[in-house]
Length: 375
Image (tube, rainbow, N blue to C red; front, side, top):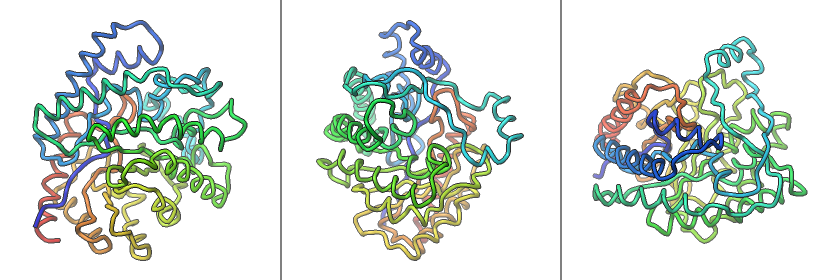
């Protein structure tokens, strides 16, 4: 029997050289574009080789060229300016001493987060083309075909880069879904699977939408899925992955909405694979949600069996046991092994040491091989 496939959520640590350039670019400081392009190309090759050598099946370009998984769109789409209000997660509001400690430690990334202040228009299509070409070149060089590329969902863009121009948030989501369609379709047209990053369906509950009631949030989330489906209507669901998380930070997470409450909604997304936070202490029990909610046969569940916020290296037996637990509620052929979140969702920031990241991914592979023998 084939082994269970392995993957991760996408972002991987950038080199210090690349991170410095990304922050200069984010601050609109002058950089040598050709030099930047060469460094990105070099680092993509390195990151692809590392993943393949570890034995990861579905690999990414590590999001090397992006300042963050969501706000990179401000460099590709015209219509953003100024600076948006930063809302702290509700769980940190409950523990001000801990929130202050995080701020003092420099653990909060500082990067540009503008608002939408005028009509959205594509201003830079070349950056995506460069990313795709860099990734394809590295894949071909290593004769590897199982690959995915991250892209921000309309919902997460609206959460991080709020609307100050369109008449309401629905009109803004509609504009975002229409303009992001080109990026989504170009990725898939190049034989790379599309991963839509959607923390707006979980994290946003206790961050952007913490002032809403739970019922109001669920209505908002359902609307965001409708616009998401509109943006991918021409793409086969088997070519699309979606990542749901409650925030890639170490904290209380005491206001996280439960998977059980959002699962019926997110299963309405026209995608083939779901990557879910499943190993951290706040969500490791939520495999139980699948006891009462049946997953359609054409969908794959990729639970996080590696925590992306701690430097503990999970023992392969722990990885194995987590997959065995999920196999009780998810059919083996619908199961994939993943990580809770990316390891560098913001360039230059990440709780996990770069070398430990790859030891954790190595444990992911070994543990999945162990699980594959007994599930």
